[in-house]
Image 1 (cartoon, helix red, strand yellow):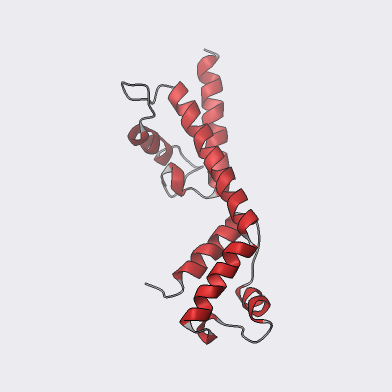
Image 2: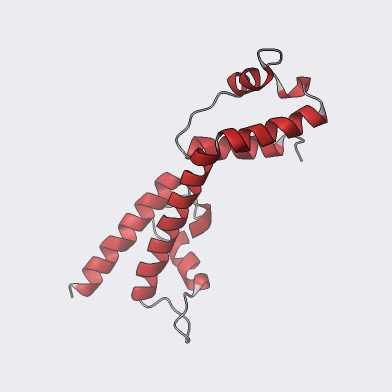
Length: 138
């Protein structure tokens, strides 16, 4: 496992949030142009760097997470309206994830709902809404 996994996870989240970051630019900005590589950092510096990213880009990270949660809730809502519930009227996530995995070209890697990229998630939600609209118009 990479010793820099926390950085790469944050970088991925920032890219998903639509904030293109350059690793070298971030490191230089954090270190005041003294470093340009993660390998140049001590463990303590690396941990402080991770905290700095979380604080500096908190609004971007939170906005992306909130948008993704909202899209997932929308998809679950429409699928529940289409009958994907348990006997006690709670979402049946086994059926929901199975449905989402097999939804077609909008999910080519057959991922579960919470592992879709934001672009794929938006397409899947749009497709589910469309299916629901067709279902109620019958």
